[in-house]
Length: 163
Image (tube, rainbow, N blue to C red; front, side, top):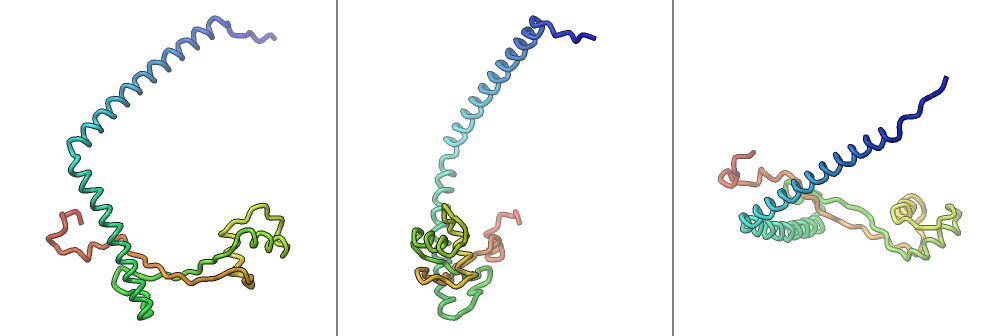
């Protein structure tokens, strides 16, 4: 039993039809993309004031969050209270400072594998679990965490009814 090979001419016609369809789809996609781009530009121009306000609020938010975090850490350092105010808590972690080249040599000398690269996270774990090498300086760090949901802090007239 012989298997017939498809006619190359028919395959080429099918291929040409596919390429034409591909060209049409790409063209439509580019046209729609251009229309969307123009609409977005017009929208941004029409609402430039809102976008400016949004950027100003983002700057204010960043600055205020930094101030709240700093204040919370200060209260914690004075009182030891891990929840200086409602919806703000303190987390404590240890950060390790060391010279990466010295650490890599130490890791290889201790027989912890033929590390060609030193991964900070892995070395930090090693510092937590084993006797800390002399060249490592451990520092306890306190950071404030602020709840994402602060709606309870808003006065009723400050809400827009989306609660």
